[in-house]
Length: 104
Image 1: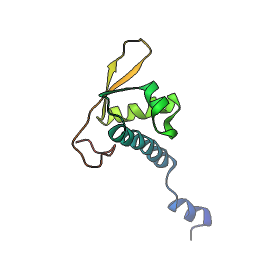
Image 2: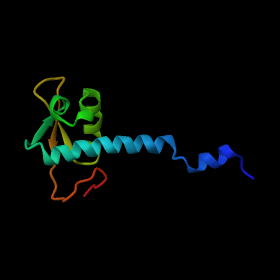
Image 3: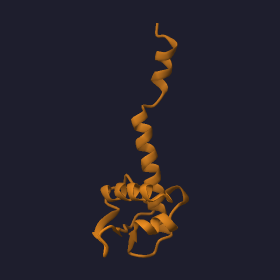
Image 4: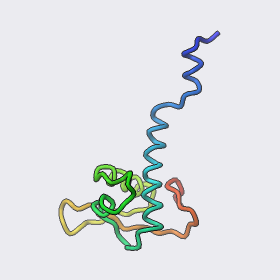
């Protein structure tokens, strides 16, 4: 017979899967904001920082989630006119409800 702690640990998701889910949730918020609210062809980290969703208003988080979108093909990094500028081209796709995990 398993003890109480073994039974409780079976139902609990692993910490790495919940962290990954939170990262994808933030990237999904950024993707939704880019597709619905942002009409320019490019976006910079400081624009996400100032104009983006409230949960991504830290520059560190904005860059992290933009890099996740770049890994999934929604953003393409480009060289900015300043050496310390982070800028991406938005790859708009004909998808009704875009998701981060959708790589088509």
